[in-house]
Length: 330
Image (cartoon, rainbow, N blue to C red; front, side, top):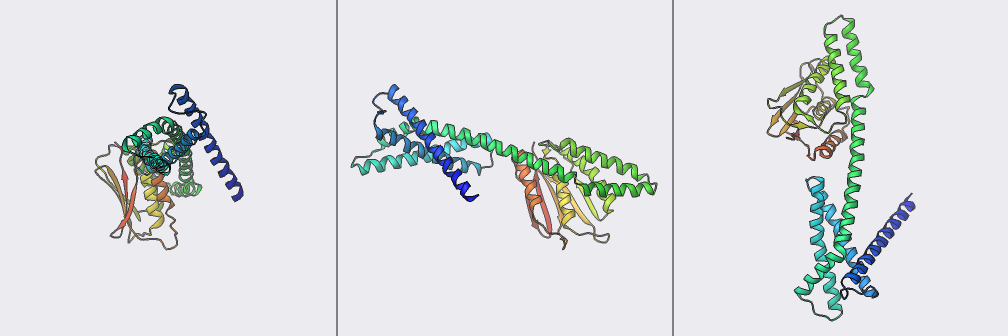
């Protein structure tokens, strides 16, 4: 497998090099035909000059792209950021290369020559190489994000519809029905609405905060039916404007229930409030000793939020409370 990966890497690099040589050949021929005297198509040295500048443009573009990926900006804006960073790096690279070649050949270098080389390098190498490279990287990145979104959505639906959750709630419903309790009908209504919400919004990128809180009220009734009053969800959000990613609040509550112990004497209070453009979910930390925490739940929630809305969820532990800060999008 390792040998196969090395072979693919070599083939990939050879393909890039051949592509750059072919692109440079076309550019050199174009300059030779249109601007006679700037480049000699039949001069091998001019081809070397163009290939080196094209390679510098390629590396500058890669560095610019990866630098732009670290920015908390929209995908299309990242392309502009990558282009500007690449341009700055290319100016540095091509000027250094030009100066070194001139000095090694015993020639003088001044600012006008550096400026002229930069403009010429942009026309010959940077614009075509960077344009094609950024277009490819943007397409590849969007393709990867689409696959990642689909994977996260599939994982989310699988988690929401996992059998043990359904069986637990059906067992509770069966118990209520045997008792002839009027609560059975209310519980069934809530269960059906919760599952309808799961199926309806599984592929949605965002929902109104109002709808998410309404869903949470119904989901909370299932929690009460299952655990009684040992887990208490307190929602204190007056301003319900804005949008959030579906199920994010539900996932926070599930995470709190999974990892924290509670009983009738010491119920666990999970509080949900709004602070400006954030919804804050907090609960006391009373970790279950027999539950291992991989942290993947919160990582997946945060990643999903970033992929769908371009925002990051923050979570931390302060003064004995676990706090999750969820951005609200207008």
